[in-house]
Amino acid sequence: MSIIISPSLLSVDFLELKKELERLNEIDELWLHLDVMDAHFVPNLTFGEPVLNKVKTVSKHKLDAHFMVTDPGFFAENFKNVGLHNFTFHWEAITDHEKLIHKLKAIYPSVGISLNPSTSISSIPNSIWNQVDLVLLMSVNPGFGGQKFMPEVIDKILELDQIRHTNNYQFQIQVDGGINDQNAGYLIQAGANNLVAGSYIFSEPNKDYASRINKIR
Image 1 (spheres, rainbow, N blue to C red):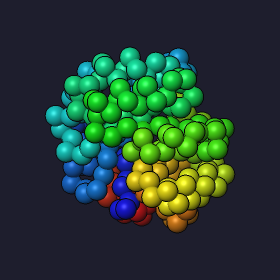
Image 2: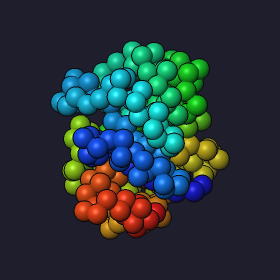
Image 3: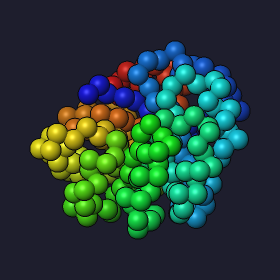
């Protein structure tokens, strides 16, 4: 699998959103990571359907939405026309996971589950792994950008990568939180192949995002 970098829109300059998206359009093998929060599952509120409808008219990249929400099934219906490629929901948010995965599969090309730092790999039933296209491991507590990377997530990547290889599953392992050029190599070596980065990329003073992305890759 190739390494996909997913710049997080949470850290973008929203006053220059169109220009920022156009800068990213010049870089290949990207997903655009969109953190959708409801101020309930996490104590923060971000953007909704109107903003994402605008994003899809400018960005050429696949839209990767991470729903940090209490009722992801509700958002599944509301966001089905905004051009999302991947819909990731939090494992901790609901109880009937397979029912929601089945519902999402009928709408979106890719479906993922996200695990908080405190959620173990072993707590996920084996039947889930061949139903999802992506597993997002949080390397910070969800809800806010700019947090410090938790190195213990590397053990979870190794464990999940072993499950993937042993059973020939095809899901991507995505990691989100505090990723930069200092830790990305360890994550890739452990088995991650989709890295979300926000603050590190968008804090580049000259807006040379390609240089920061290449350092991560």
